[in-house]
Length: 180
Ligand code: IMP
Ligand code: MG
Image (cartoon, protein in one colour):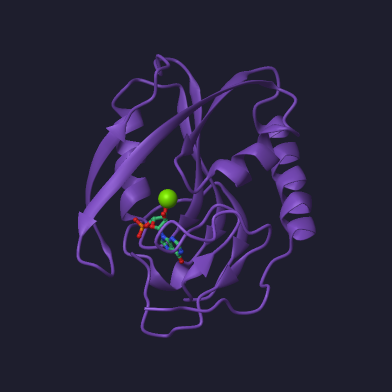
């Protein structure tokens, strides 16, 4: 199936500006403390690097790979951690850095996974939020931008592993393709 990309929804400049604002908020919230940013591979890499370079509190990073089992169009809430963090989470302030929250099923399970490791706190920072498809009762502490119910690509987000490298946020124009 061939797909095409729509117009630019969010520019690189807008993302970088918002990342600075969120980093400033994180600095304020964790003044004098240490944080551990946990990025979700692969989608969150670009957003995480934008946010982390503006954070001034003590900051370490780690990554997880979580995959969700479900139908083709929606995640089921059964997630498998394909790669866990290497860091000892106990007593740490964790900020999970995600590309997009759709149903919220992946993140609610991921948050639970970290809460079981006796952290000091667990917060969520997502570049994008697609609230129209939410199923899980999830609080997103830091949100970059809200998007409509479109299949979003670019700035880390893919369709079939393509378009992660686009330096802006766009969407697929084929209506039949829905979020996986
Ligand atoms: P959730 O469990 O439904 O919230 O799904 C979250 C994951 O699905 C995200 O981390 C993305 O990897 C993927 N996803 C959801 N919506 C989109 C989209 O519009 N474009 C690309 N990936 C998406
Ligand atoms: Mg993801």
